[in-house]
Length: 57
Length: 371
Figure 1 (tube, rainbow over the protein chains, first blue to last red):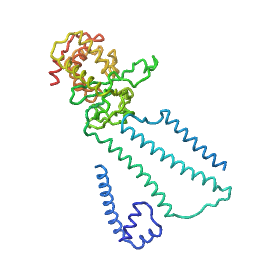
Figure 2: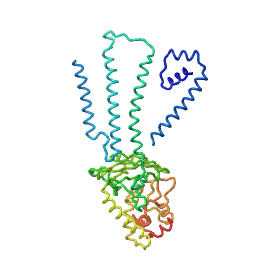
Figure 3: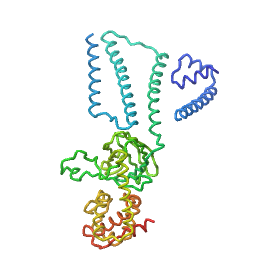
Figure 4: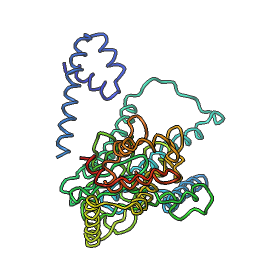
């Protein structure tokens, strides 16, 4: 699981190790990445929203 | 060593050139409000960040081009990806952007905080003039460009404030928080005064907010900055900032004048006074489209002189001025002209340039139509 989160974070940042990418494609299942990706996108949006609300006060 | 000296001299030279260009009025003004100084500071900070990035990036690029050129036997390296370098060149711009976003957000917050204003001014854009209303004070007027036609046509020497002068400037007090409520009667305009750091769209059907607290008395000039039609370049903004005491005196005078104007509705007006007043209104408000001699600019702006429809249909003439023409550039003047002004201008149009209808339109008649 931690591995999936790390890969999604790397995708958000835009940089991933080639070795790690290969490993993900060999071992992981697409569905896990899609679900974790969507969840983390939601977390990102909520995080930015909270940050903006705090900053606006 | 000599190369290095050259590079330093080149960088020093460009920085010096930039600095003198900025000092010569090429740059945005420092302005006369807290917010305008903050914006100027942001602009300069970001400008110098860009200069440094430019020097570093192009420096490394040109150095590499020169140092590792093929004639010196440089061999290209063949490799794919380098995660460390990629992380660095992603993280550094991210940090720079955050560094710029923090002060920018603080300034935006300040700009949008229009609460607790001492004075509210409604600014309405109209093709092609500005209408100002001091909310709750019963004072409102139209501000037209006052540059003579001769200067525009090149028949006379251009004045010092060419295209940046108006018949009635917006008078504002210094050291008081003034809130602007901006909207438009027809198309999108934008009210821009660089020294006040206000550049806000005036959109029909919307009310935008902005505010200033001017610190120095003076005359500040600006323009409409959203392309709004034929005379977009001919609707300047002039703000006259005066001391609070002077402002209160001015406002009291204007209020008195407005009260006199309102009382003018009740009395009978004579032909001569209506014609004199009407000509003034016509030349300030109507002549920009229908021309001073009433010849218009057909087919968009019909001629008023010797116009049989206008002469025959008195009621339609009045309602056109009051309500405008939907689908055409003719605006409604019910909110921007007083009943006396409308009566005077209609009387003038029906009796000037050979339109000898002899009609007199009384302000009281207009008043009853407005109600």
